[in-house]
Amino acid sequence: MTEYFTMDAYRQAANVIQQRSGLRPTVGMILGSGLNALAESIEGATVIPFGDVPHFPAAHVQGHVGRLVMGVLEGRSVIAMQGRGHFYEGNSMAQIGLPVRVMRLLGVETFIVTNAAGGLHLAYQPGDVMILRDHINLLGMAGHNPLFGPNLEEFGPRFPSMNDAYAPRLRAVAQEVALRAGIPHHQGVYICLAGPAFETPADVRFLRLIGADAVGMSTVPEVITARHCGMEVLGLSGISNRLAGEEGSPPPNHEEVLEAGRILVPRLETIIRGVLNSPALGSL
Ligand code: HPA
Image (cartoon, rainbow, N blue to C red):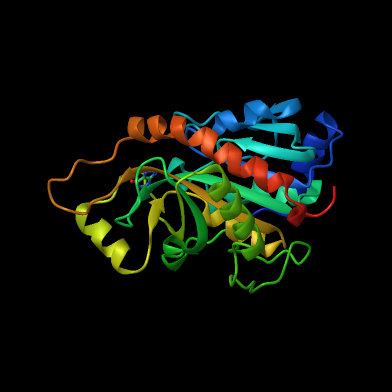
């Protein structure tokens, strides 16, 4: 497991991608479990399997395709990851963050990250969208942070701020789009656990108590990496299941996550297209 990468490794990965596509993307996206169908609507797509790019993480989970799609969406140049590497697959934190830094080298300024998450907040229903207002980095508190190792000043400072990690203006645009389209949505706090085991009822009560609204096994490492290198971030969770936190309540399962994804794909697509359309993202 590689603990951290040199600047050369990031450049090597970026070069391989640049050789395949002349596009200079300004928007980067990660499409999580069951949500990767969003990439199908990218026009003029160049598709690059993760395995073709040096140092990219392994993404083996069912519902995760593991490839890069570059092209145009709503008139903007985008690079999307269909699937992502997870910590529970044996990827290091640095490996999970690597594609984000590579996106930065390719020119990405705005980072849109999606995931499937379990609803902790009692009002959240499967199929709802949660716009991330903030996160709790439980994995980081346990000693797993993608910025461990020598700091690469080319990307950002040693001690980056995580205040307003999720850009208030992008959240406002996403909320506006969701409201107009009648998509059930919330703004809330995401918490990242290592997985792959789902939470116990006692875990669920603990996570709710410490202020989390939705729980998943991704996103936070990528967002920390994106903020470190100065990207603006929008995070969207698709709520795939409810977590009651009561003994005897039905456990979540991966099929349920994928099933909810089918309802969530058009909802997230509407929000993402609306955000891409917004002048808040700046000119092309
Ligand atoms: N827990 C953790 N991760 C998840 C869940 C869950 O209930 N649902 C989707 N991802």
